[in-house]
Length: 182
Image 1 (cartoon, rainbow, N blue to C red):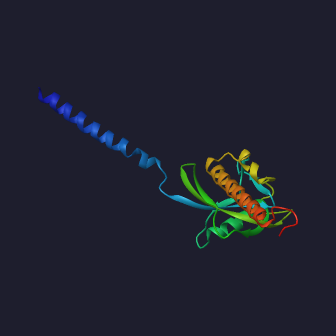
Image 2 (cartoon, rainbow, N blue to C red):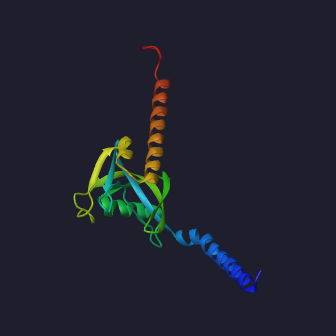
Image 3 (cartoon, rainbow, N blue to C red):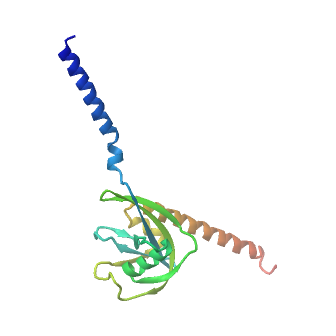
């Protein structure tokens, strides 16, 4: 084999290795370097849940936002419920779930809390661009497009259904089987 061919083969080989190395690291270069933490509230009043239109206006979501430095996830969830939906309330002690999504090359991790609504304001900070939709909580997944949020809502519905079944069976156990007996 001529030295020209050996040189060309060596160059191709080196060039191929360089291209392969660049290709192999491509997913790492394309994947988000930082996960952005967010918190959200699922506002509940009785058997109804409040959804708000997304910032793009193309779907229904729950109030959520970035967790700022020095702020807890719980504080952020309450703040976003007020700013985006004009709702105030009490968060349950524990989070109900979390989900991830990607947007504009960034990865977001959302911690979700259930909020029992105690106040609904007629005017709120983002009322010029946000609309509230009060729906039956069991039907929320019909309106929500984000798969991660849908999963959290399905788990919440299942939890509430199991709780209702448990409450009903407990009530039945306490009632006498035959009227007049105690």
